[in-house]
Length: 85
Image (tube, rainbow, N blue to C red; front, side, top):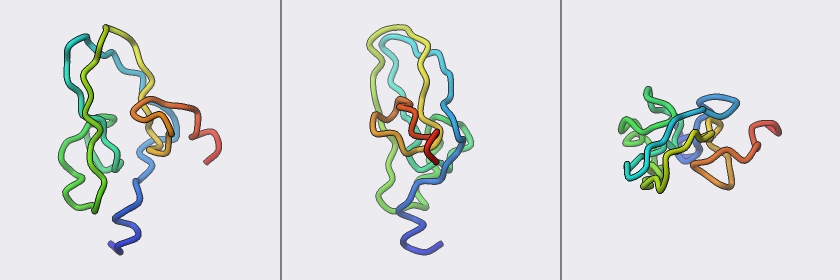
């Protein structure tokens, strides 16, 4: 893998992942696109340079659309960017 490819996230899915998030839980959203547990991190980013998971604590129970293309400006949440890819 070249340095350029290692720095760019892989589009895991051209669309969002609909997930149930629970209040008080910590989540690690995969930003590299390599995780087998999409949209969450499984540690696969260790083969990338600079692509780390986005860790967040959910404030309330909700169904959310998490970014699958890894290009959203509002990650970990989908902002529709996948429609332009």
